[in-house]
Amino acid sequence: MRLFCKAWRWLANDPHQLIGVRILQISIGAMLLFKVYTDLPFATFLWGPNGIGWGSTQSVFGPMLGHAFDSIFMTDARVFYVLFVMSVGALWLLIGYNTRFATFVSLVSLFLLYNRLPEITDGGDSITLLVLVYMLFLLPHRAKFSSGQFRVWLHNLAVLAIIFQLIVMYFTSGLAKANGDWWQQGVAMYYISQVQWYTLPGAHELFTNPWIVTLATYSSMFYQLLFPMAIISRIRLPWILFGILFHVGIAVLMGLVTFSMVMIGLELFLISDQEYAQICNKGRLMLGMAARIR
Image (tube, rainbow, N blue to C red; front, side, top):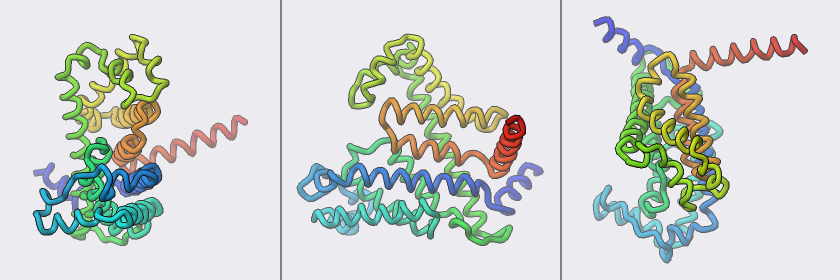
């Protein structure tokens, strides 16, 4: 009964992860802008009527509504309209303007591009689509609220949904790795690094070192497998820091910049407002001590 009352108060009293929500909005906005910037020169080739895009939304919306959405890509000009709309939504997320509408606009435009050409997407696009759905229920940036409001309930439920989605993503990925022979033998990162499609040229030589290969392979697998338990333990902040460094490495060595931007935003989302306050206080103390030493 006491646990139920505590959970009730957590959901109803005040919105949680407000700083984390803002960081997540910034990371997704920056990722979508980067995506538009890199894909814009090839937009008509990728999604245009004479391009390689072939996908349809009819499996989601049905023949009539799906055909209406698919017709957006029947002219080159409309492809650029979709990218323009995505840019506006991403920019508004980045600066914190009308974030709920910006989330909706970003979700629709990314969903259309994702279904038009699913082959060029990565895990970052998939998790971003799911997270944007949950973000529709978050409180807008700088929104006014009162404890116990229904919108506070929705916000906190969306926070839990995002956290649970991240846990599921990490754990299922870790299980998939644990069932693979190369991951069990500690050599998976070597084979990944030798595929030019997945790895930047500089990583080929780096991952010929057996110590680096073994450490990178097992650390990434066990990080994902132990993630659900680690983030509710006393080592949650070091675990999150390790995850951030892990995704920085993915961005640098594998070139998966958009994926890493979203995942780093989700890692930072896990840190509570109270923990951010403590981190800031400790940072001020350290800066003060450094200033006195000088």
